[in-house]
Amino acid sequence: LALLHLEMGEVDAAQAYADDGLDMAMDLVGPEHLRTAQMLNTIGLLALRRGDGPSAEDAFRRAYEVRLPALGPTHRLTLNARTGIADALLMADRPAEAEAIAADVATVQRDSGLVDPVLVGSTLRVWGRALSRLGRYQEAEDHLLEAWERQSVELGEDHVHTRSNIPPLVELYEAWGRADDAAEWRARGG
Image 1 (spheres, one colour):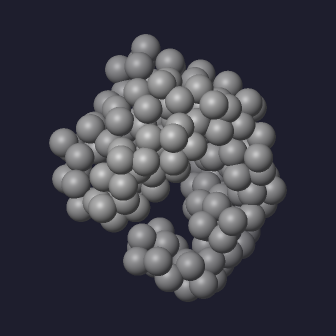
Image 2: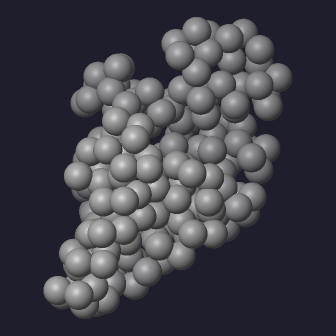
């Protein structure tokens, strides 16, 4: 329910369900269970949506600490928590740290053959945003456009995850001084 409300943009309702879910998971299965890690991951997503980088980083790191020994370093959920950490670091204006994590996660995803368009696209988007903030515009463009392409083909151009690539592309092109490209992506909804 928390994730459904988050997808609908109802952050307060999502937070209430996530908090209840975390309390239930802690009581029923304890802090080291994968269900608890899933609730922590959801709380991290909500913190990102609220713009609270430190809370997001804490929640994603806690989820990662449970997932790593239970699932291993190449499991999609372990990698998902690491992408969340990178996203939180980016929000905290720590782009170099975010870039290093996102680059590593993207490499592991490719090497392990992970093709999930949501997870791979999210990692590429975070990586591209970090590179853009570091002024490495060409690399950023490559990753952001790859995220767009993967997700638009697999999910459709109107899917929420696909559309989440538009604002980073606008931001990239504005920072790069490519106003026409920024305007083109802004016209798509950014």
